View: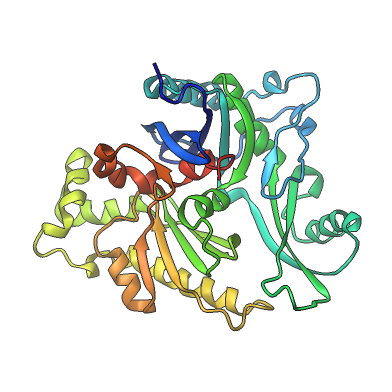
Length: 377
């Protein structure tokens, strides 16, 4: 008999280039408790579908702040989506659900940041009813495709000083291609899940790694193919950028220098800090672009209106490759601020006996933990 049987349950699912990660949390006395988690390691092509038929256009966005809520008309659009990856990824997701013994059908998922438009607009203060129209008009000038093909959501960035009477509003705007939303929604429906919400990885990571901290923080998410950079201020991810450098490049450097690969490579990475003769300089081709992008992001943020006197307080590393030896120390030396691998379990209750295991896999699950926490915290 489950101790959590009468409590609300939420599932966060992160589909990325290196597989599927999911976490189910139960809400108990206002806190998130770990129920189960699952990982399917498999290279996935998560780029925009190549074949999209009519039907996807029926999706509409509800402006609920940071997420894309799913709305559709009476006819399902799944039959209009011919991309063969939908069935393949749905089956993989189903397998993970079964193996992990997930108990809920309600899920929140993330969209890959490489396809997300993200901007902060400075607008003159107007009546609330006019904001949406003005935002869409401004964003339409900046989008890489017609706004009719995008789902757009926005939220007001709170004024840090309530006493200050500014003539302008800061508005955080996020937009995603409608066919991408349709693609992900179809996968979840095929897998038998109720996809309640879609949101960007930035908000999920802020939730699991920053929480109520209102300081200026940079999150560096080092995945398999890409590294994403988010600056969080007042609890909101206000900037994001991405570069094509990730864990695969670190693996290639190791393989080339040590002549190993496969499962042996995974073991070597775990023992890397103990191996004599391995120095950070070996990995500069991977670390340097990350360091330069951190510097550029801070410079960009601090030159924005209203941010001139802010001081970034910490850099939080996450993602499967964030635990790579030397990385945190190297970045800390360059920027002279606090740098550490974030703990996405910090706001989650779990059994003490699981701590070592959860600490090891935590950086890979930061997004899915944040997604599951959405309706709990």
